Length: 242
Image (cartoon, rainbow, N blue to C red; front, side, top):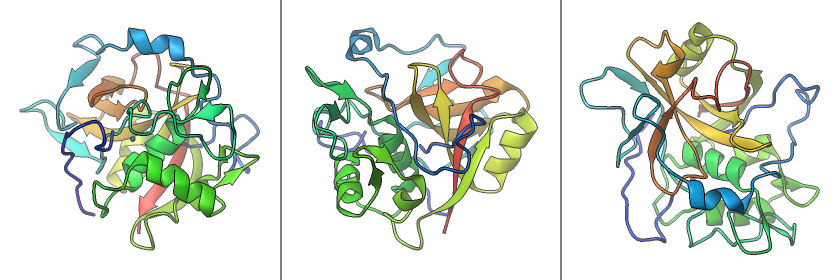
């Protein structure tokens, strides 16, 4: 499993979960609406979480001096100006990120990209990924991502779709990460929202040990579980490396 080092460049450089279905009766269905309730009004309120809940690191790594198990993740933002106004799938009123008069809903696609972009050049972006999904049967009903199909984007050596789950306990989540699982988790930041888990610090025994990237952010801010948005009971979409 090769770690991907994030290089922060100009706006065109990639900013991007993986998303697991929750226990909502949709567990057998690999298709689900993504980010349909994200609102552009929150853009002006983007800020780093308090220090005890998030650590802002340019490379997305855990704070210096803290033991950690990391998932190879390349941060990207659905609100990157290079692709935020790209139409999501074939839904004419829906875009990757916040765009005047449109509904932003690219959180799941961007989160999956963060996990899948293992052996690809930084030339590949969430915008490219969205286009690939459009051209290769990656959407249902216009702009509902097909989780299993999304895993085919990075080839046989990339992501492999495992299935759906939910966050039940710290020991369960730690075991999944230790097994090399790469996960997208549901978030309550919006009515429907997804983020990419990035690993854990310390011993992985408390919720705040576990970290994630939020694709709505415009920089690589390391958030922590138990922050009121992601935690016990949230849905997971699980992949593993090929």
